[in-house]
Length: 238
Image (cartoon, rainbow, N blue to C red):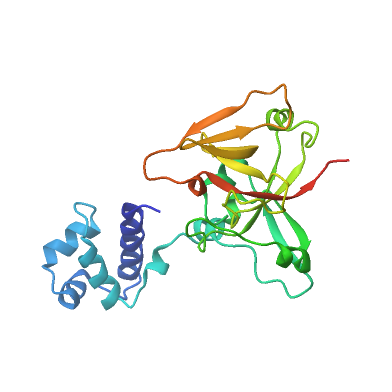
């Protein structure tokens, strides 16, 4: 929500109080220490308030920033995943660009919720390179036709992939096996095996007829900055 919207919402609250006889402009000027003309210009949309000015008005009118937020907007952006009290954990399904770039998946981006056994999720080992503590750990994505073709026959179109976004290491999860990763590519997820060679990420498909891709890492970036997470479970459509 933009600062101008917050100012407009504050203006509306004050005008409603004035219309209800609970407040007058002169009284608000006295409470805040502002000139009456300054308050009048704000109420008549001829000028805005500084951050300090807004803080002062909120303080004397016993308001908080939460009072200025649109409840619909707050609800859209709020988490819809309260802690689970049973043996299952809720995991959200989101579009690949959201899973690749958003540390926390808010309700407006949730496509579906799937339950996984807590015992299964708790057995999965994390291996983060870089700070992922602020990232929602498990996210589901659905594989589109192009990504499925690259990983054919191991993956098929419509497969649901559970991504562990706290596993951003190139260390093999199981000895002798290649990890499959969701990789940040063009602000979305490419699903591939990944290697590091000469400062570049090599994205290898399972399908030998599909081309190998190379990502040149930006200066100061590491492989962990490009790995969205390890694919730790695959659900195939029947």
